[in-house]
Amino acid sequence: MLQTEVDILSQLDHPNVLKIYEIFDEEDFIYLVLELLAGGELFDRIVQKESYSEKEAAETIRPLVDAIRYCH
Image (tube, rainbow, N blue to C red; front, side, top):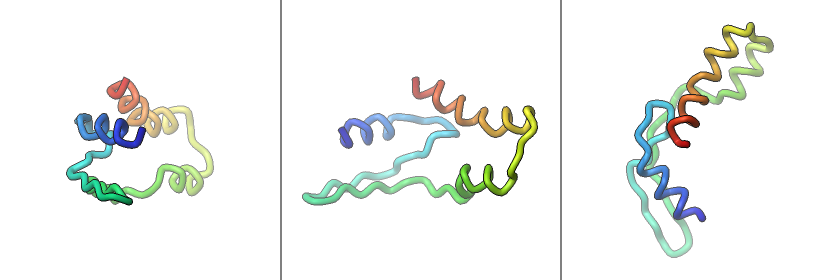
């Protein structure tokens, strides 16, 4: 199942989906070289802000919905 997920992710090309650049498959481990994402965790941003207006919530969730739509 992991190999299937890696195969699918390596084929995706969307600004809101993490890119996989390289895969190293060893006997006991699989190493993935991934795109650097330095923006922080969405969860941390939600906790820090504490509350969102409807407009802010829509703007925050839109990239997630776009990525899911692309993957689908």
